[in-house]
View 1: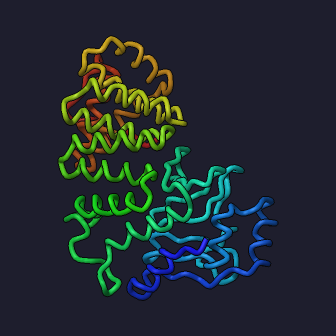
View 2: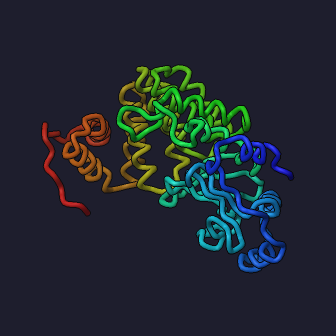
Length: 323
């Protein structure tokens, strides 16, 4: 692999946006493989023979290397699974790993679920560059109006362009399709968002979150019959009982709205997965009220009403001590 598109981006973009290190030595690569007790994936090893790691867009994503000059040492990244190699980390804390099939997976250190972020290492690399460069102007600084008024999130029009640019490079990247759906939903184009979420599910059947966002968007459209199977699918795919319980609660909420006969079984399943679900929803509503987050409070109360409809819900919930 020669990574021609990546080399072209280094030459074309403002200085400093992509800081790639010189090639790793064969000895450094061999030492890394000895420390790991396994060979490096072929695509990543090929990258190291050209670039010993890289800092992309002011540490938005840092690809680890194996030599003393690497921007991040591969040995410093936790390797929790034998069938994956974590090779990069994002500024957000997300990590990127190569699996046995050569796909790039994005994982949150606090969760078990994985999202397919790239069909191959090279496609992921090129799509990442294509996506992130949209945020920057010719001076290497953030371009005007790329963030929403809060300054916390990329504006939805920009986020949509980012996802579409990434998908042109790597059409099989489920994570980019999911991001496209989220941007469309933020723009109020909910029917188009549903189609994007369905495409993401087809590309990554084991990830619960595209199905969850399909369900939420369908509920917003007043289509609980579409939301119900989406939430149920998300709950079944979840790896942790507490997460699955919340997702079954969403399915229950959709079933109630749809008048579906599965209400009793879904309620039983949600409570079986987490016997403390009701208390957790009360705490969530209380915390959202303290933070003046009315949307989150209304969401928690709606789930609480679906899970425990006989429980009186006060207008203002008491603040509960943290567990």
